[in-house]
Length: 97
Image 1 (cartoon, one colour):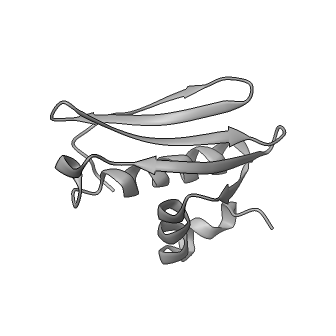
Image 2 (spheres, helix red, strand yellow):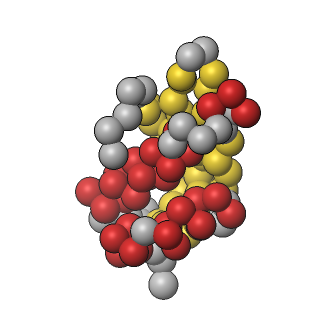
Image 3 (tube, one colour):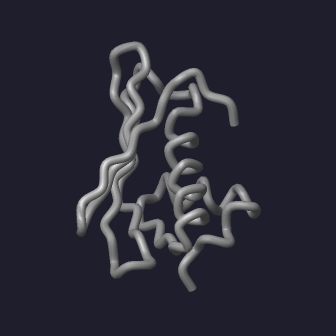
């Protein structure tokens, strides 16, 4: 997916988040770490001004790509992330269980 915005990632020992700032509005996806090899996506928030522009999907995709590259699995508790992963069979290799 080509995007006209940059996604940044912050991570501590127990939590992390991805953010994208587009036209002065910040969208985010947050997660908790469950051990060394699992992340739990717990929230995706996209301001109304950015809805329909693919920002939320891009955040989930970046999480999937990073999980794949780092050998992690994802538990998508966030309904949006869960729905996006369900719509994309090519992303499901990173699902836990």
